[in-house]
Each structure stands twice: as C-alpha cells, then as structure tokens.
Length: 249
Image (tube, rainbow, N blue to C red):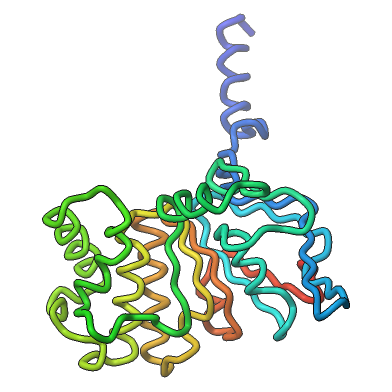
C-alpha cells in the first residue's frame, strides 16, 4: 500500500470514529454556586435553609426547580437574583461575584441582568399594560420615546400588542402574566427568574405561559430558572432539579 493510500485509509477511519475532543463543548455556566449555605434566625434559634449547595446553570438553559414547601426554593431563587446574600459560600452570576456586593451594586446589576416573574403578577392597577411594562426602564437613562418603543416591542413579543392600553382589571389572568413577562424582558436581561409563574392560572393559561417561556428560551436564548410545584410545568423545562432539606437531589 502506498503512503497516499495509507493516509487516505487513516482519514476514513478517523471520520468514522471521531475522537472525543470533537464533540461540542457545553455552554459555560452563567450561574455558579459553590458551597452556598443560608441560615435564618427565628428569634435566637438558627434555621438552616440551604446547606453547602453547589450548582452550575449553563447559559441558555431552561431549568425547573421543584421541592416541598420550606425546602429553600425561593431562597435559592433570591440568591441567584441578587435579592439576598448567602451566609457562606460563593455565588457568581453573569460573570459577577454577588457574594459580598453592596446593595447599590446589586441593584444596578439586577436592573441590567435579571428579569423577574412571580406568581402574583404585581402589576400596578392604575397603569396600563404599556405603562406597567415601561416601569423598569424608568430607572435607566433612556428617553421617554425609547422607553415606550421598547415596552411596545416587549408586549408584541408576548402577543399583547392589541392590549397595550388596557388596565389590569380589563385583562384575564393569563394576559396579566403575559404583561408581567413583557415587563421582565423589557430590559433585555440575561436571566429570567420565575417563582411559580403558573401557580394562579388555569391549565390552558398555564400551558400558554409555559409555551411563551419556551419561546423566550429557544428563540431569544434567555436563561430561565423557574421554581414550581407543578410537575406539568417542570416537564416543559430542559432540566429538572429537586431541592429537599436545603440540598439538591
């Protein structure tokens, strides 16, 4: 066999059996918790909520966190969102070490990186859908015309362009949650944290909201971390986690 033939055969074999290093690398972690613990005090009695927790959430993932009441789910969500600090351990989110950041630093960081969706829609009843969505942008240096434009775009993304000037009382529960989602994405955050986003909705409305979250994840590449009690909601996420007694299972 000539050298050229030998090289050709080797190339064919390599194509059939590619080495491991040719596989696609995993996305880097946009959320990283190392040895995180959180303890609250009930009077003088310490209550350990999270206990030495390690967690990596890849960028662009859609993750669901389940667990019994009191397991620490909302506490973990608040830590990831920079609303609380750990008692011990290190938290890095979107490239920023949140562990010992000042309140001012955290407030600015949240406005640039985090979108919040809650079970209670938390809409201002005296404001229209458009005005509710525009609220987070009032903390920025954007002018009024640009704020309005961005709020309109966010409402179009969630399919409520025809409800922009309606008040919350004029909307269904599912529509109110869509307004809340538009408000969460209006500042183009890297991460969306959702605490029981379908908890107050009927099954059809809940499914519609979950489909919207899937769209935000797949089409807009938003990282979504969702706390839920609903197994049907959890199954719509690409990753399911369970928290029990302060530890991930």
